[in-house]
Length: 185
Image 1: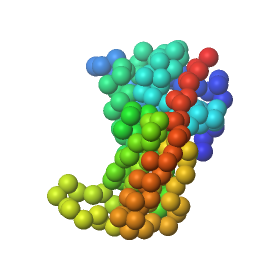
Image 2: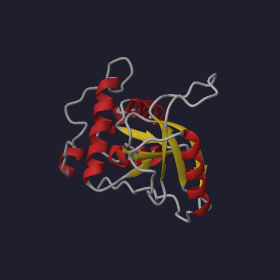
Image 3: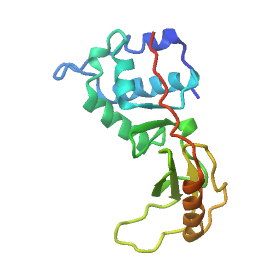
Image 4: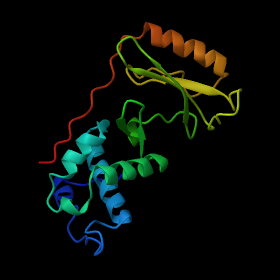
């Protein structure tokens, strides 16, 4: 994992030049800025944030006017999720890679359940589940985003995982993990 000091983050825009026609960074440069900012957040112990918190923190840095607005950030976050740098939950939280579920290979969330206090219990599989397919495309496993319990690393039949995950969602009193503060001082 890359480590960046606070000074590195404060200078993240140094040396970058905006495109002449748009006044904004080249998309590859903007993506690099986002990845450096996320790496810095991880080194400070953050495990989750939101797009709004990232936007606020990035735009507190000198030279950030060339980064772009919320639309640019959301596009870059979708790219980072596709590259498995982060995960974006259904509630809009951004789980940094070290906090993103990683059991069993590349993951696709098939089912989300909610605990009585709002944490999510995700049932995931290694393959996407096409809309037209009625049967699960393979085995699954579950994990709770509140208390961090899971079915473990061994994927099993979807019906068994659904029963276990539903029971956990019913019995778990964990709240969703709080969004981490982004402090760009």
